[in-house]
Image 1 (tube, rainbow, N blue to C red):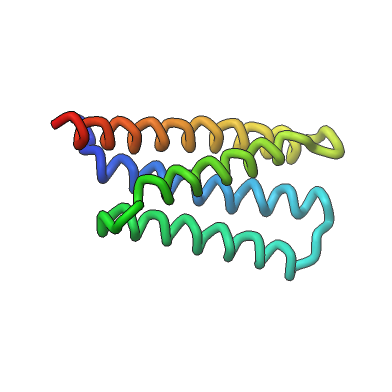
Image 2 (cartoon, rainbow, N blue to C red):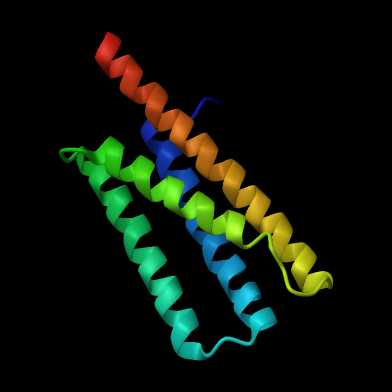
Length: 122
């Protein structure tokens, strides 16, 4: 069963958002960040992910650029989660989530870029 491109992109964006939230919570626990910083980071990330997905679903102007930009920004965010201050079980889970998030974001970018080339060439 092959998943169509729009459903695949929405699914990958949802997985990436969940991984971002989980990784942020783990990193905040390890760094002992306050509740305000964690809530701001998660809300900001969720709003941008949902906005990019809404633009993609509605095929708004410049949706491909905006979605690719958001995914690249949060890929760098996942890369920053790879650097952990201590090495324990939570740090290992954080690193695994960050690597998975990087791979998911790169996959989503490739799917969106492939869709773009099909539209341009078709």
